[in-house]
Length: 88
Image 1: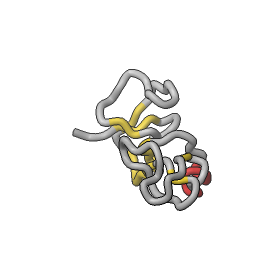
Image 2: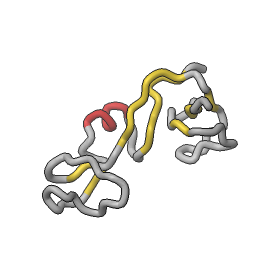
Image 3: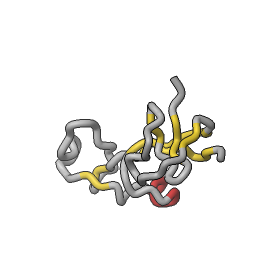
Image 4: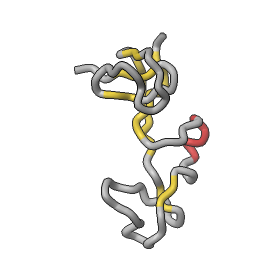
């Protein structure tokens, strides 16, 4: 089963929904290339948060999306999988 990417925000979903859960867009494409997964990072050591973790197991600090240089350069502010390029 192909995954679909929102043409507006590039968020990847497994099934083609009526609206994008991230931006509310209604146009999707099964033709996309590459992806980046945005995860919250530890504020102190950069450890990537895993499901269910509230604090960093390495240093005890909290998590934030603000430390990701890649997410910042791509303009991504919420966690999830995003296509790098989506065909119109």
